[in-house]
Each structure stands twice: as structure tokens, then as C-alpha cells.
Length: 221
Length: 221
DNA sequence: CGTTTGTTTGAAATAACTCAACGGGAGTGG
DNA sequence: CCACTCCCGTTGAGTTATTTCAAACAAACG
Image (tube, rainbow over all chains, first blue to last red):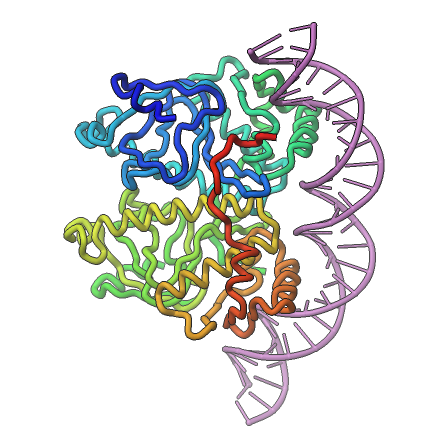
């Protein structure tokens, strides 16, 4: 359970699938930078309903807020085997402004999280199942591409259809049906932990949300 | 349009209903503290779908992020007449740590926003219309209560049913039906810009989300 | 090589939506 | 102060997106 102790000497730590990177309310005097693997932050109801709030991919800081609040709020679980680097708060604060893992960089990651949540509130509140899924696939594609993890039109996709369901807030069965339609239309092909994006433009058109074109008065008939 | 100029001499500024406190991508070298009135941050689609992302109530800092990013990302509109105090970044940075409007306080407000968004992602993704509405009403009640704006079991409620719809991500008609049920069951009574909470405990039971009781392995059949 | 975990399918049930219309009330202008 | 809007709340009926349940199949795993 307290694996942190054995890990203390080294700065790198690894987690097996389903292992927790954080538990609710746990104290945290460091921030993780994911080097390899995927992790998810989620919330669940006693009756079993689960909603994934954040997805952490390689290169992401895993919970920049820990720097400010000193503790985790929601559990974070490894979706695959994960390798991460542990960055003690003290070390982050010591870094010069434009160095890697500096305060600025971490706070910036926090702002990115905030904006990503705005996006997902919008998605969950106002988009259809298909739109949400396309949106998610686009987001993943571009985040992976930014880290050079897309070769040709293919990238790793460790999420199960249950995971998709818990991210976009629909049922697993429905995820399956939507994915089949997308595949049928030649947009994306998900199989065997891999994703092949056949028509990124079309996928974006279905999923991408245009930021308010002209700020008009809301609900102007 | 550039009303800020006329407002510059005084630190207090006011907005009429439907006036913008911020527009997308506008530069901001200050943070607002709402003194009176309500405002909403939202995002919309060309086809008219709107989703309210954040609600600002009296006492709230209106966009603590502006302090870090120097600009607004989403439009913010006044839902009622609003009076706010303009806090230039420089002044916030100059304040001692535990003074009012200090850096710490503002960053703390930012963390609160982040957590509130987690909550709403969960709500929108996994709760039913009734649960979402109860949850919203509870949240508003407690935020207003914290500012001493609830007398007996009554508080102001400037939101229209269209606003509710755009917050909880359902249709206005359905909002109406759910509210009627709640009224029928003697939980809340919304009328004429006022809310009367008749049975807070029951309302909470329907709406409040228990933070994961026991962090268990997700989807453990 | 058996067992578990994930995907696919069908059919029936339901939550929520759309459209359309009506009524009240609050403000506005004459 | 009255009449006229327009905004907002309310209702009904029919439609659609999504869910649930259940079962079969495929693939990954140890």
C-alpha cells in the first residue's frame, strides 16, 4: 500500500494497471510527470455509476493542483502500466522560470486543465453521443500527436469501450454502436488497442466545437 | 463598447442585465470581485445550443485565471444588474498573504473553480435531470447561505427556467416538469425570482453527490 | 487451455426532446 | 394609468436518443 516508501530513493515510479496514483484526500507533496502509459481521474456513485473527469497521457503533469493544495481530491488510477517521474514541490519551486518542470510550467498545466474541463462541461451538457465521441477521439489524437505518438494515422488506444462510456457519459452499449457507425462511414477504426484515424477532417467536423463565433446575447430568440 | 475607459477612474463598475463582463479572448489585467448580482460564463454553438459553464454570485472572484493568463477565454454575461469591484493584478500581487484579495485568496478561488468543474462534469455525465437540478439548487442554496443571503428558507433566484436548462444541460420544457414534481413533493418552491427551500434534507438526498465512499477498483463487476 | 475481460447483437423500455399552443405577468410606451 | 408587448412559465401529444437486460462471441491473459 505505502509503495511510496520503497520508491523514495528513486525519482521514477511505476504503477501496474488498476493501481492508484492517488486516492481521494491523500496528501501530496509532489507532482507526477507521466512518462509512459495512461491514467484516469474519476468519481463514482455508490450504485456504480462512474465518470472519468481527466485523462492523463504521457507528458502530462498529474495534478498540478497538488502543488497549490498539497493533497489530491479525487482518485487517479492507472489504465495501463504507467511510468512517472516524481517531482517534489520543493524542486519545482527551485526551478528557474523557463526550465522544464518549473512553477510556471506546472501552473500553466493547471490552466490547461481548467480549460479542458470547460470544454467537457460543454460536451456533456450540449452534445450528442456521436459528437462527444468524435470530440474525444479528436482530442486524444491531437494530444498524442503533440507528443509524437501518432505514426501515419495510427496511435495506441488503451481505452476500453467501458472507459469511453465513462468519459463521454453514455452507456457502453451505445459507445459500441456509435463506434460501429463511425467505422462504417470510414472515419475511424478502433481495434485491438489501436486507433486508426482514416478521415481526421470529417471527424473534427463532427466533433470539434467552434469557440463562440460572434459573442451574441444569449438566447436571442 | 469600451466602457472600461469611463470606468477606469473608479474601482467599482456596474453592468446591466445582458451586458458583458468579459468577451472571448479579451485581455484582462484585473480580476473582478462581484459585490451584487449574478453573472454567467457560457459557451455556445452556431445552431444556438448554449451551455453555462460557471455561475458567479456575490462574493465570487470573477475569473481568478485572469491573474495567471492575462486574458479571458469565454464570454461572461450579467444575468441581473451587477456591481463589481475591479482589482488590478498589480494590486493583488501587492497584498500580503492573508489580506483580502491577496494572491493566495485568488488562487484559492481558482482551485475552487477547478473542483466545481469536476463536480459538474460528473453531474452532466452521470446524473439524471432531477438529480442535476436538485444538485444545482443545493449548490446555490449553500453558496448563498455562505454569504448570508438566505433568510429563513428563502433566497433570491434570478435564473429563468431557460437558464436552468443551460446549466444542467436539459431542455427548458423538461426543467419545468421536474420543478413541478419537486414542488409537488414539497421540496422547493420557485416562483417570481425567489426560491423557497421547504425540505433541504430531502433535496440534498436527491442531489448531493457523495464523494467516493471507498475507493475501489473501478468497474469491479 | 481454461478463464476472464471486452465486444457485438437484438428487443423492449424510458428519459428526455421537439413542436406547438396558451396564459400570466412584468415591464414599457403612449 | 392603461394597453400592449414580450418574456416566461405551463401543458399536451408524438418522436427520438439512449438505456437496460440478456445472451453470444472474440480476444487477451495467465
